[in-house]
Image 1: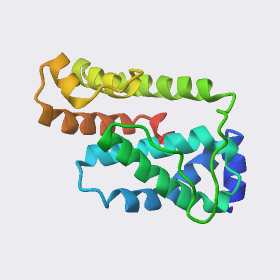
Image 2: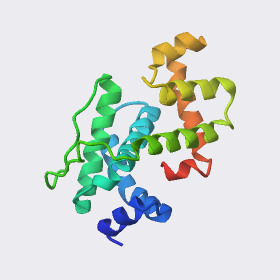
Image 3: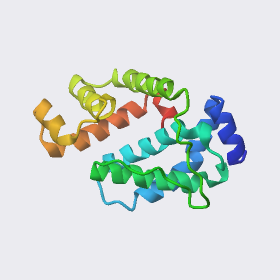
Length: 181
């Protein structure tokens, strides 16, 4: 199936189509993120965020054939946002002027709620401290930074990223999370 068909099917909540989109686009995202010399957990964060952005804008993709360029630029923007801590501009695809519609899809809040529900379900297998780190980093409205997490939990700054990476890895084994990967 081509990108047109996959996007249409995934927009209609076809999980197999979503999984196939992720499978086909993962290589493009990892290739872009490998350019950054950062901890693997930061790359993992940017990877997850790039696909979250795709899920958020899936209904507004006008040129699915440009998806590889769009997701590569989105991944780079998410990485830069993570590294610089400031907002980014909406990415455009390299093969054209594809830009998600400015208006948020009507079900955006539902999607965000569903993602949080999946994350919470996967967090049940984590220790209390690890669940707190994931919650502060991804479920708090502002996305708490490593320094504040360390301060709140009495952890060294350098141990937070590896702990978060292990937690995300463990959560990735949860069946519901595979859809987000």
